[in-house]
Every structure is written in structure tokens, then in C-alpha cells.
Length: 126
Image 1 (tube, rainbow, N blue to C red):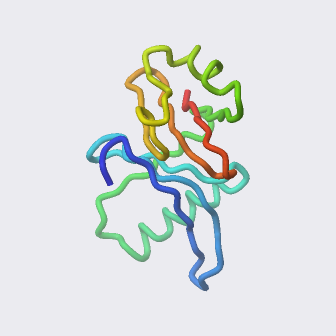
Image 2 (image 1 turned 135 degrees about the horizontal axis):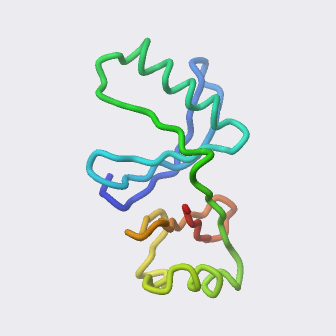
């Protein structure tokens, strides 16, 4: 996955049943940001740490929860360009310049374009 790109994904339990969903975004060549559902963030972190320690102990991976440090409001609908544009004036919010599942921004916040609800929206990570 390219730096600045995101992917929607599903996390399955060992029995193949859906455990959680979210996105994985590549921030740098060796840094990623995963999002999960809010109510299951702690469980997903524990699940990943278990697999790192017990299933794939040789992987050079560290996990750091930013759940309480990063806000991730999203905006969709007709007002989204005006609302997001006031926070990210230097970034073009045109669909061609900011396509679906891309990350933008080297400021204190990062913006992402996603479409979980069948409507294109932008999220800001503060």
C-alpha cells in the first residue's frame, strides 16, 4: 500500500466470524494507523497484541493506542466542503484531488476520505 493510502478491512476471529471493521492507513513507510469501531478499540488492541506475542512473535511490530489522544470526527453531506475546508484551507477537497481512501495533511491533523455509509465523507484526525 502506498504512503498516504488507506484500505477498508475486516478483522475475523479464529472461527471466521467477523470481529471488527475499520481502516488501515499508511502514514509513512514504516508507520500505519488503524481505526476500529469505538466500542471495540480496546478489544482489537488486545487481539492484535495476543497474535503478535503468541502467533507471530518474530514480527518487528509495536502497537500504540491513540484512542484517547486522537479525535476522529467525520463530515458528510452538502456542507462537508465548507466545514472541512475551514479546517484544511490549504488542501483541495475536490474529488479528483482527494480521492476515496486517501490521506492528506502534514499539519497537526490528517484528513481521510472514506465511504462506509455509501456516502463519500471526510474524516479529520486531530
